[in-house]
Image (tube, rainbow, N blue to C red; front, side, top):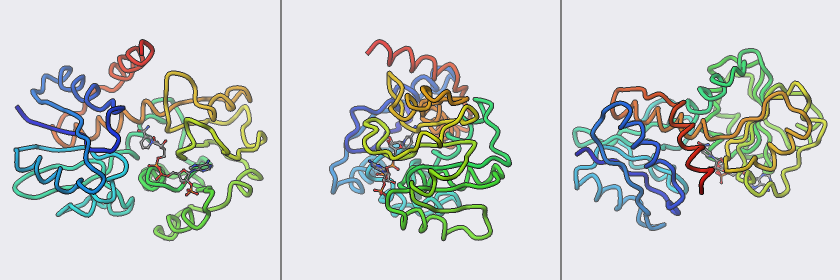
Length: 272
Ligand code: NDP
């Protein structure tokens, strides 16, 4: 049976086996998908061992996405831009790398009828998750994409990678003085909400608020958005399933339906 893994540290919390086994069942693909904890200094060896055992592909999560990129023989343009890889394919003795988080995010926004074209988008955070979504968001032709980060230089570094694009970097304070159609939280302050310095005036009844983080309950950012009557309040569960669907497509050549799996996952999470 074809073997796939997701490597991370920690990894116990990963929903990827549930998602991929559900995709496999729905598309009648015979495969096995498991989590694998890699030691902090043992990621490359863990992947190499898996390849030697006949592994067909792997997902990679924190903190190994940059190391995964360094292992690849070939990278997609998108992976090169984002500086991180979450999908590895092992074929003909080579390692191919891609990143699917951005496609997962864009597809989820579109599935929620969020218009990206000509919109003013604010992306909070400039870590790995932000880097991975910039190009797919720009490909939707927004009016502007502004990256606000606590450490502004990190947002500036992302902007410098792209020429002739409506891409800007700023501090949270500067973002608070502007108006945006869509606000995407890509900070790791997602679950705790600690110190995310968002002014109430930033969120209006016309705002679409998206949090890449997800959980049983609304995240603090989305709670705030809901209290301020934001037009749409969306968590990152659809992005998670969407990025997995894109990985599945890369490996198996079939695009699984995400809606039924999102519902299954929501129901499973509500029973935990
Ligand atoms: P990183 O560690 O690479 O980046 C963290 C970012 O959060 C940095 O920009 C950091 O700012 C910022 N940050 C952290 N704490 C605070 C705070 N208190 N106030 C303001 N900013 C803060 O993480 P990732 O980019 O990999 O992941 C970010 C989030 O996205 C995670 O919660 C992750 O679970 C989620 N995610 C969800 C996915 C999905 O499929 N739904 C996919 C990928 C990620 P600074 O640079 O100043 O330190």
